[in-house]
Length: 307
Length: 269
Image: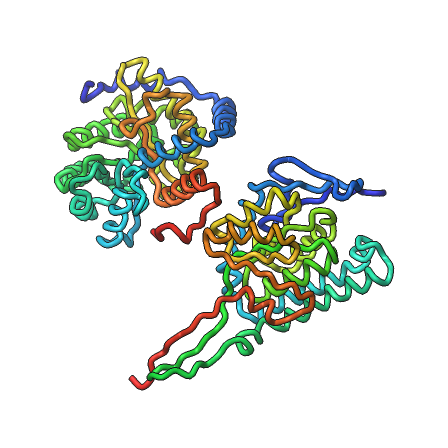
């Protein structure tokens, strides 16, 4: 992958991005969301949803104690039930990475941290790079960066591109997830352009939203991003992961995202290496649905942890 | 113009068709009534659970005001209900008793803690007292007869104590119960506090009885066999299965859906 694209190349890359059929995308996402996943297929999907989950807490009020509790839940989502797998990763603010390192030692759960002036991304590139380097030094194995929407929306693609390249370099071995914040991009064409731009700049994952802006992840936006991933794979041969985040609260929504991923990108994306669901409150609903399938009785939040 | 009414379920403050799209004709009549599914029931429980803290947190006086308004709304629709109940002095009497029931329980909201609460003599330096708190989501299996009064007599005490209710309307004559939903909908009850579902008892009861998020079931309209299987399923989350059959108004009916919470408050420290 080239580390820097010249201005003329970037221009032709962006001009080459075809526009998105908005009505078609909405329609296809809606029809895929209606698909009925039952019984053993549902259990399989719910299990996968847990495996692909980035358990997230991104609050100003996060404390070491709260992060410790979340880490415990990430490793063993349901105490007393070893059949429930650990989640893929925890996602925290940079200052809380050290807490995660302490509590996740020896487990398979990875540590993701947001960086680059999350959630707005409105800061100096040097600070974003420094924040990323520091986060990696503290122990983050995955970095969730936000793009500079101010630059993107004013058409300064070069700046956005260069910044992603710089942050990717600062990541070293850590995986880079690039958050497009699709709720602020305005339309599907911009989402597709931002997806291609981020992938060309070296993103390992592209991610829908920060969760701090409404609308956050929606199914049609996810579809548009996945189609960009699919087309990028055809062009370059490099598979890029997808992360949906923001507003995914129910098991039913999670399964819809799995269906859209499977139908758009195929079975190779049904793994935590290529698909993530970022969520703070989704896990309990998934656990409740698993219990419902196993026991045959509708479940109650009273029997699950208060997060 | 003669407008034929499409009866609906009452879930989360909305009048909805069954998600299953099914309907049935009670007692071979000419009216289609929604045949609720387990998913309608699930939605109702979710709505009720969400509504519970808000309703339980209202002041007793406010709950009384809302129940009283339900009485006013029912009285305002007297002619409609009398006709629905078959007309004549018997129907009129049933309607009057239903209104009276709502008024009576409206008055009980701020009196129950004084009557059922206690100050307990304990051998230690504690001020020990017990007060009733609502148990949560309550399922009510309405009796077949009387069509209106049967449900009002059981739903009013549940709401009075601060609980939220999911009522299964009588299978063979659910129209009065479904119309009663219109009374609750215009009485300032927050969405989800009252939910009314029609359909087949045989289909819905097992799901209600086994639902982990339902805290109590009033079995007043159930047969002995149904009560037995409800009790078996209810063991899963130790639901209260209330088997009081009395048809009169009683504060004990309110208390049946309350949990007695005891506080040990140290004194002399």
